[in-house]
Length: 262
Image (cartoon, rainbow, N blue to C red; front, side, top):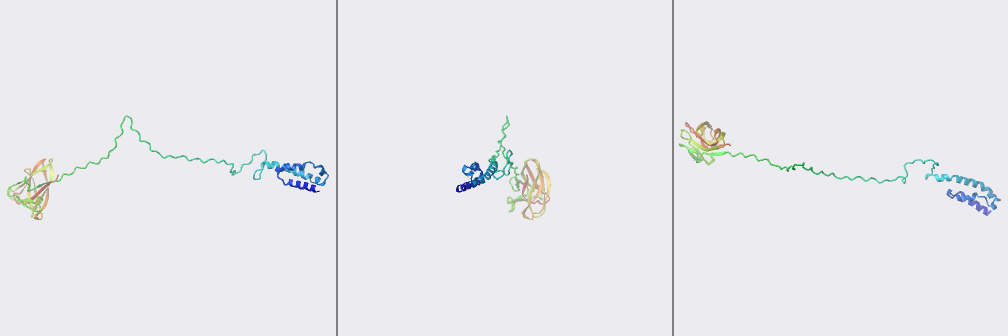
């Protein structure tokens, strides 16, 4: 009976073995040894063992074609697609390297046209200065080149341009003062400013180059020591001219200078 118990235990352990150990079950399906054929234990477990071996052999195709998650695909059919695919089944391709961008370069200047010379560089020029206006010409009454006739004479005065004025012009025909050397560049009418001194209103006649030009009124300047001025337009010829002051009936003012505008 001890030997039969060991045989029964060995057969029960074979039932718990995995399918890859099927060869170990094959001896159990073999005919019982002669010593066991007569025992009740051999007859009792023979057909249960045969049924278990058949079931184990039927499960071999299922184990061979089973997937990792326990599902199986019938033979001859394409296994269904699964998503997302396994990480090992996805081939990773390296990310493309971004293209290198180069900084734009300015194109070279175009060559000069054939047969022609390159244009010379432009030179900045400043506008030419405007011609300066010449200063007005001034002629003193007591200048040595002038003609003082009759009783006409110079007297000193602090407020005069040259420190002196010429008086006693008029009252008679011969008491005259003539400015000489009044020079202009061309014929024309020119503005002449007469600077004079008088304590009262007086008049004088003007002759240009021996010809009567105008009768001029001279208002009072506020005293015989204060200088005033009047303007008169005279026709002069190119070159030197003479300007004479006189008054045959009354006294004329004292004269300081003439200023000729250009």
